[in-house]
Amino acid sequence: PDSVFRGRAFCTLPLPVTTALPFHLNGFFALPSNRRTIWEGTHGPDADAKTAWNRGLYDVLVPAFLGLLREAKRQWPVA
Image (cartoon, rainbow, N blue to C red; front, side, top):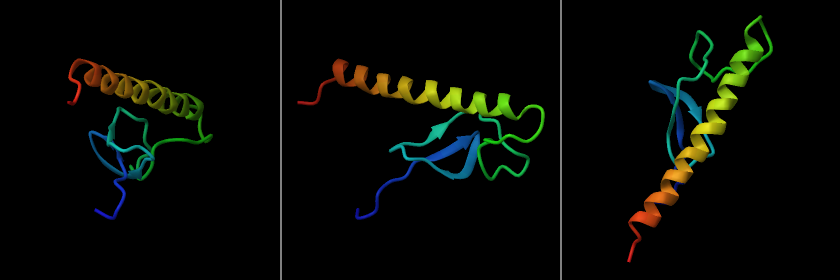
């Protein structure tokens, strides 16, 4: 196809958020009440904790998935 696949973010249900990743990313992200974005802000007493939580998930999930792909390639090489 001519279009480039853009992964989406999910928090159980799909969010209207695309990522720069070539796959969908599902995580227990902190979200605002309208579920239109992934929390990243500085308002309220929990803001820094929510932002740090979301960044931490991304920092863990993406490298873990890439490691899984590398291991799958090593275990099952394509001829």
